Image (cartoon, rainbow over the protein chains, first blue to last red):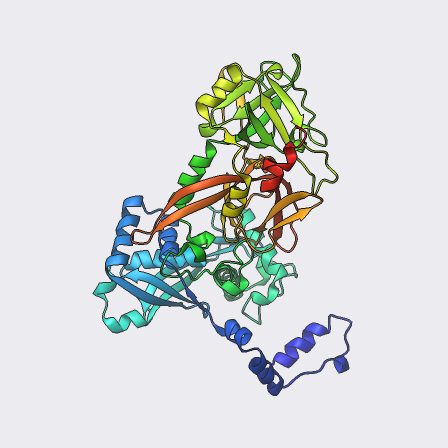
Length: 437
Length: 99
């Protein structure tokens, strides 16, 4: 069967059948013995979640903070590790959980972790729709959402399954935009073999709903939906398996250690609260930069990001040279009648700096766009503008001990935070004295 | 916006007297990263030290330092892109020679 499929596919290529050799099972057996770790990895579909990932999955399910804290407490006080299979793929989730938590929460963890959406999918060519219904089952019997794991007999805990049932309609789902269906169809056209049914019409053929029987429409719709859901589950699982993790996660082990050892920390272990608080702290020094050729600064153009620094007795903004000079906008600063500089500081508070209140220092002479060097310092002269900035933000001293910074923060494994304002997030308007972000 | 990375092997290097740090960004289909880091240019990169309270699994920022200034993003290739920044010596020392 596999031989026939391979030959059938190669007929579309400029390869003669005589040029194709089929290696027997001995060959693959030798390869497996030679590369046991790779073979084992390919066959190991068990994914161990961390407590942090479980809580994060619940957070994405829109549980409020009190509930999350309560769940965390229960996981700590009465821990129970659950192995959760599913009826669509061989993937198994190992979930740190608690007997005091409900089936509903376990369902939410599985749904979020494997990326299963309850949205219905429209298929515009067959004018049909399909969507999943999910539950946690034991021996294919759905368990009540409000039941706690402690309510189940002990042997049932070994048979838990994330069960996805597909429901279809012989009409489009009017609450969903037709474009959703087009996206799904576009994906399946690229991956036609993912549709399970061998009798399904080929997707590159133009389908006419009228030529299909209801049974064909049903089979095709269910097959397509299953393919899309399985793809999403594998994609999510792929990200959770260390072998397929890509940088910046490649140096991390997603199956985080029980002990929260900073040396073994992964980006995904970082609690959202910590990231939020750290971002707030660092926001004191960060600025978004814009400029206006209008002296009142009514219409401003975003140009990049920067950091408030002081060097000796001079205060200003360290940024990339191309943000304020060719090949970027060549800001006219330092003399009256130039460009007005606009800063967005901590908490979205804005400060306008008149051109005579700032000086542009180009610190580097670039040799290339890729490697620069590309740095500039916009000095803010003593006066109203500087006082306004000091009232809101903080200036980082560049006179600190360089060697100490290198030795302390230059080590491998150091956690880094990059702050800035990607262009797509700019949405600032100035109306009189009102600044809206 | 704040994006977190870990300083990995080969991320820092020197070229023609300047030092650099690069962070790899994952652009697989479910990536939530922005299509472009265009407006990030000039933004700071911070090194972070923190403590972990194992009992409560609480993370606490203990010390931080400015370590870089972002200025360049590579094109996305094989679902990856690098963010390049000038590193510690460039921003504390080399850039200010002759200032």
